[in-house]
Length: 164
Image (cartoon, rainbow, N blue to C red; front, side, top):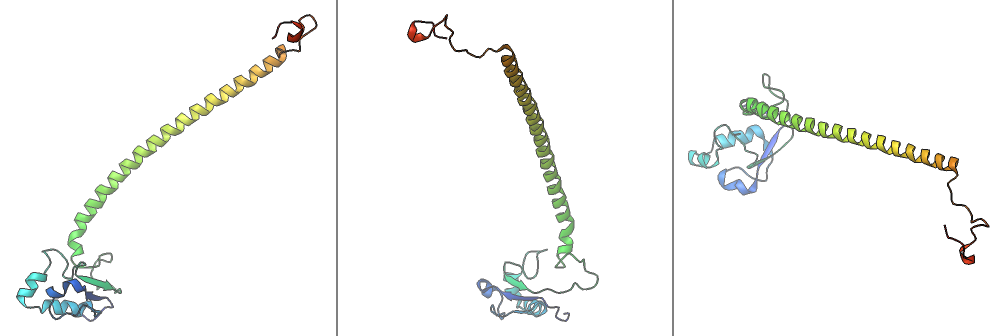
């Protein structure tokens, strides 16, 4: 095993039965925990061992804290050796997810552009109606079509004249 690198782990209490000899309350260097797991009797290791390709210290069984520099030659972004095998699958999955999200964004952009075009059409129509209204008011003023006070020839309604 390598010298300690600053990362620590401790066993979750609910998994005490799978890892005889490892205390659940103690934070220990990862390297020490790995040695303890490696020294488990074969029957205990069979119960505790994760499936092939999984991490030796599963997140479900252990808590982790601290950080440590990556050993020389290890990929800088991957935290565990087993991550390197999963990287191509992860990249493919993330690429597919990215493409799907780009398609969704393209569709939303198209919808937004259509909504903007419709809003611009409505704005132009509202402006045209406003202009028509203003033109009609001017025309009304020019023709002086406003109701007038009844003249002496018409009389008021009280006097028997015609109402407007």
